[in-house]
Image 1 (tube, one colour):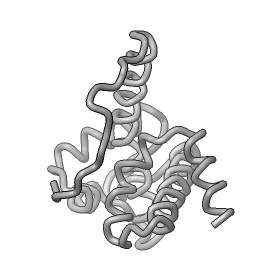
Image 2: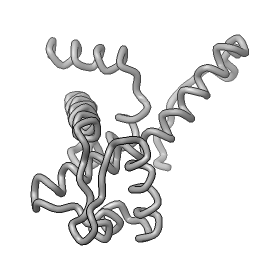
Image 3: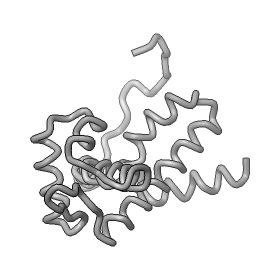
Length: 150
């Protein structure tokens, strides 16, 4: 952590229990979906750039073990987002490609906002990888409105 100090109230009032539980539930759900979103976005990118998305390439680019990639690809298949063909790699279904398009748009919007407020390019790209999965549609719409005005 850098030496940046951000002032905040010493103790904020706790929200009502159902409100707080709902917030944490949304965060857990976003974390679960983030993994699949990262995979479909990468598979789409690999298919577009080289015509194939092999589990080995997916594992290397995501920095995970080959077995982890295989397990997650299995989950993508069960959820109807991808199909795997022996000796031909992984392909997205129509639903998987639609998800990849949405995720890529969210990522771009978050990066554009971070750049607009002065975040350096590499930090914006890196930080967007986490933010894009956790921000609500309402917040994304506010980001878009802000960017149209600036």
